[in-house]
Structures are given as C-alpha cells and as structure tokens.
Length: 267
Image 1 (tube, rainbow, N blue to C red):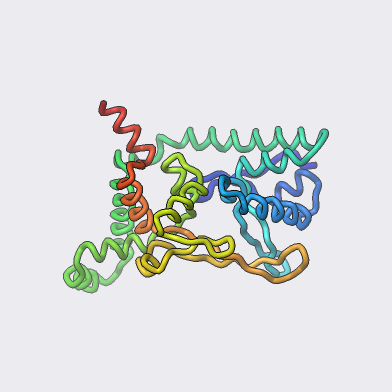
Image 2 (cartoon, helix red, strand yellow):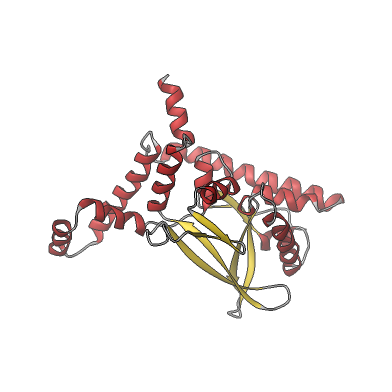
C-alpha cells in the first residue's frame, strides 16, 4: 500500500483520483470503479443526497489510446470509501486522505493573500470576471479596426452576454457552494421553479431556458466494468447561467454567503 495520496483543485473543489485511491488500498482500479458505480447508483436515487458531493465521473486515456472511466473523489467520497475498508488498510487510508486534503487546504490558505481582491458582492464579482475576460481578449486581438467595428455595431449588453457565455462552464456543485448549499439542494430548487428537469440521471434545462446559453453539456466516454463502451452527459453552467441563478435565488431571498457576510458586517 502506498502512503501518499495526490490531491488537486478543480472547479474550486479539492479532489483525488480514483486511480490513486486504488493504488493506495491495493485494489484493482476497475474493481474500485465497479464499487463506486454501485455507490453512485444508490446515492442517485436518494432525494436528499447529491452525487457530486462525493464522486464526479471522469475518464482518462491509457497508453494504448483507449479511454477508460475514472472518478474524481471529494473528501466526503474518500470517507465513503474508507468506511468500506476494515483493519489496518482502512486506518492507513483514512490517515492518508485526511493528511492529503488538510495539506492542500493549508497550502490554499497560504496563497489567499496572493490573489487579487474580489468585489464585495456576488453579482459584482461575476461581472468583474466578465470584465477581466474582456481585457484579456482585447490584448490578444491583433486587428484593432475589427475590434472597433464590433464595439460600435454591438450594444454593450450583447457583448457582455457573449463574454459571459464564453467563460469556462462549471458544475452545479461549485455554484451551490457559493450559497452554502449542496448540489442536490440547488438542483431541486431549479427543478421546483421549472428551470430544469431530470432525464435518467442528467439534469437538462426546460424548453423556456434551453436557448439562453445558461448551460453547456459535456459528454464523457468510458468503458464500464463489463467492457462496454458507454458515455455520460454532464451539465455545466456558464457565467451567464450563474447570473441567472443569482437573480432567481435573490427573488426568493436566498443570497450567496459573501453577501450575507457583508450584510452582517454593515450592521
């Protein structure tokens, strides 16, 4: 059993790779994937739990060029796996993942002061991201005349929409974290307000919102434990979609944590 576990950050969330976990617990990776598939299937049928809080399906290419499934595993997911282990193996894995996640969290805390300060409210922060993208885009644009033509012919709000829709999309779990909620809570809220519906295990936008550029769907190919070629669809939200969610939640008096903190400070 290896004594170190690699932890990385993605979508502002800490994960480890199922391949690393398999090595640490001396288990074949395809067997671990089979087990996690079972956990995911059970969690997916529970209305009070969100799969993304534990595991996110992904894939990787082997040296042969074939694509195989893997999982990004959160700290909660590691705890889930550890609970299924017994004896020395379970103790060592628990100590390893706790140390690895804590070490990464400590490192991120040390780096906080190196990041530029964000605006104090959530909506301004999102708009600041769009403005920053605008600046970078202009620096890389070699055709000044074309830029001027675009600026003159397109209303500012439309150009702003284009910027937002061009930002990297993120999973619902990250948006939910901004509000101190789970992905399951956020998905159910959007479902209750007729923004999205669930088809099989995938959340899709209702027809009314489908053409607004709020989400992007990504398809991940993988091979299941039986050797069958499969694919799964993951829905992610654009910056424009995040603004839409922010406005919708605000109407129902649900604010992001940063706005709540600022309100307390002002009082």
